[in-house]
Amino acid sequence: MEPYRSLRSEPASASKGVEVLAFDTFGTVTDWFTGISTAVGDAVPGVDAADFTRDWRGRYGPILARVEAGELPWRRLDDLQTETLHDTATACGVAIDDATATRLVHAWRTIPGWPDAADGIRRLRTRFVVCALSNGTVALLTDMAKHNGFDWDVIGGSDLWRHYKPARETYCGLAALLERSPDQVMMVATHQSDLDAARGFGLRSAFIERPMEWGGAPKDDAGSPDNDVHATDLHDLADQLDIP
Image 1 (cartoon, one colour):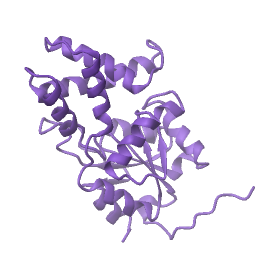
Image 2 (cartoon, helix red, strand yellow; image 1 turned 135 degrees about the vertical axis):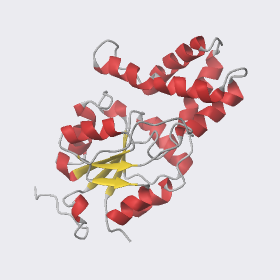
Image 3 (cartoon, one colour; image 1 turned 120 degrees about the vertical axis):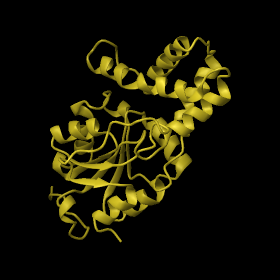
């Protein structure tokens, strides 16, 4: 079989050799805080919707880590989000019935994209293969894409490899799926831990600033000089990659 040959023009130095841009979704291309806090405010009376949303999101990383450590069996993100939702409700002193839980968990499929996201993805797609690489399932990410007009070439959901980032199987799994080497894939994220993990497995990295990800609450991620690119948004990323 002949080796893969790129049909695109010579890239900017920051992305030389890169063929694929793999995007984190929750926070990087979507504003989960606005979407979920609005849903919580509508569905759970008597709580501070902002605090509830931040508490719920704060339980996301730890439960994924327990799955990857083998403490919990692999389950779809919706199932894990349902568990942490009930834990959050208990901590806030409220009860949530099954119908409300389903409504809130499915709200993650319709969170709004950042204003630059859909157009930025389309612009980047003129030169690169653009992919979602997320801990959401293929179904969840497909619904999110339809809702926001994200024109992904490929949707890389966690159920394809039954692992969650920052596991090696996710980053290298996407590269293998697309028949690329890891260094031909650039991870695009607003979470430095995601980028550090990707770089550790041989991928390139682009940090996207999303200072309002937590709804105005402090955000630790400021990017690292180790990243190949640091951009204010997806259009700035496209500018730095010399895309018209």
